Every structure is written in structure tokens, then in C-alpha cells.
Length: 119
Image (cartoon, rainbow, N blue to C red; front, side, top):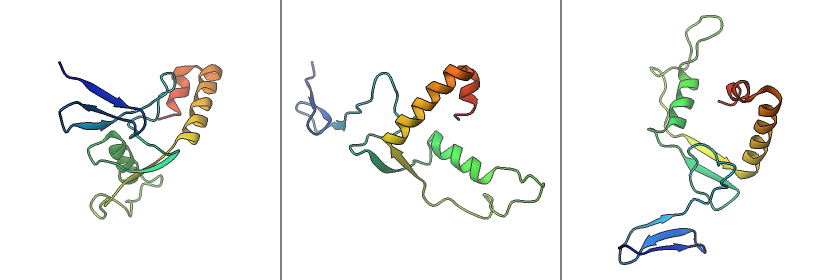
């Protein structure tokens, strides 16, 4: 029988009689915010990307694991360089434009074909 408090003023939720407090993610139910986006109060936020996340793995792979078109050995590799910090810019306005374009591509090309260009 826990009593949960949701504070819309500071967008947090907590359990009465406990120190536990967390932010409330307020997404649009029809349009998801970006995959793995963190909560944000402003239209644009810069967020550290966790090393164990899918986002980190995708970016690191694109940075280090791409083959050179001419077959030469890349100058940047996991052996020669280390990622010190990775950040993501979360921009609600740009995400809304992207989602609108995605819907348009789904309508024109079909969902399966359109999703190939979005990953």
C-alpha cells in the first residue's frame, strides 16, 4: 500500500515516506521521443551517452569498424584511439521534423523500405 505522488510542477514522482524520487518522462503517446532519449526540460539538451548503451555501440562501430573503400588500413582504429566521452544532442524540434519526414516516407515508399534509411 504505497502512496505515489506525481508533481507536474517539477515533473517528478516519489513515494510518500521514502527518499526515492525520479523524473517523469512526458512523451507524446502518438509520437515516441528518440530511442533511448533521456528526460529533458528544455527543447535542446546535451546528454552524456552511457558506454553500455545501444547508441554508444552504434556510434563507436561507425567510427572504428568501417572498411576503407580502397581497402587501405584505417588511420583511426580501436588499437590507435580511445573514445573518451560521447554526447547526444536531443532536439525536440528537429525530432518532430524527422518524424514528419518518416511518416511521409512510410506513405510514399512503404514502412519496410523507409525504415532501412532511418537506422
